[in-house]
Image 1: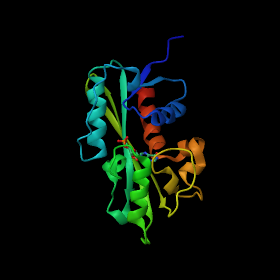
Image 2: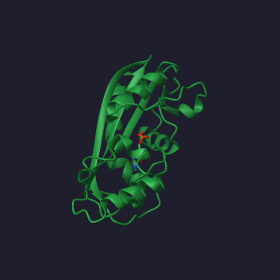
Image 3: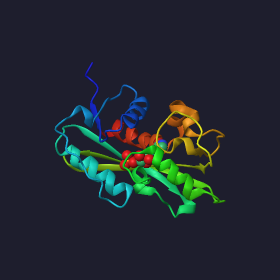
Image 4: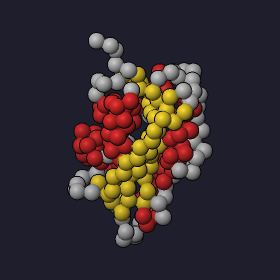
Length: 197
Ligand code: IMP
């Protein structure tokens, strides 16, 4: 049997890689850029999820052989005009500090009646420095007033997906991976790879 083809995830976020690996199963050998010290650091200078996902997938596939899949994702809150959006990971003032991000979100949502929000994920598949296809997934939900749950990452303790009573951080990956923005984008990417890889 041929070895599974390699799919490189353009992230250093081990949690994202684990979510994607769990969803893809063993059709691909899923690695991320932490396995490739030669990988350049890609600055996310875009103003949309697609621009940032494209920068990461194209930049990394320029130096690594095989399929590269990037994901750019974030939270859009209606009462905040779509913020934090592409700036989700540094909303609290420090890149990747989830506690600060959640604290700022709670502050800005204090007293707001409209709690609607969604996670959005855009994925780009690239090879040889060029985008081959892109995909997008969303999950609608609401922002609660007090964090609940210890699983997941980021804004998960504050986000209750539509149709559920629990937050993503209470539901855990098994349920999250059937509903999430990332799962929905990834399903499309996997279908594309099945027909083209
Ligand atoms: P990225 O790594 O540039 O895509 O930024 C993603 C940021 O959006 C993360 O740091 C989180 O703050 C937020 N985010 C994206 N997806 C999720 C999720 O599934 N749960 C919670 N927060 C998320």
